[in-house]
Image (cartoon, one colour):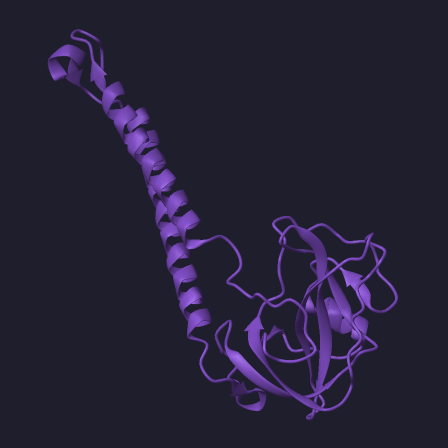
Length: 236
């Protein structure tokens, strides 16, 4: 190979560019592997489940998907319908209902997915009783879009919202809310479709992205090697 391509004499600028490209692509590949490890951990936490912890005993650093037990009563007059949620390719909403706890605090409970009627103006019926109850669910973050667009102002109840932040919902209710929602367990009454899974990019996809970045690093290194060979007599 060296005899056919000439002598190996890398130039400074292409070498610096190649080193930078390889380092960048390798770093991105390692980042994707790290994200895959995080998703494996989340999946393990989700699958482990375990007995629920009473809300009053919940530590501030409780992991995502920790199962919890809460006692209080729903506020059926002030519910949110989280728009742009689909199930089996059917458009619908997630029903977010405030649960007013015995200590006076409030937690937003995701009671699951419900479909729209014939049109998007036909909201699902989300009535629920206000009697005292004990519920069990999992801690989770509110879903976030890939691109955050300002939603048009909403009014009335139940209120349709599009990827809100918890402080916005708290302001609409006029009361403080816990920073994370609770995904209602499938076996608890007064819920809708609750096929909860770990959301976001899958482990396999993160690994696929990592392989792509490492492949780019390899291509950049190979191009640098090939372009570093000079014909005999070519100046350095």
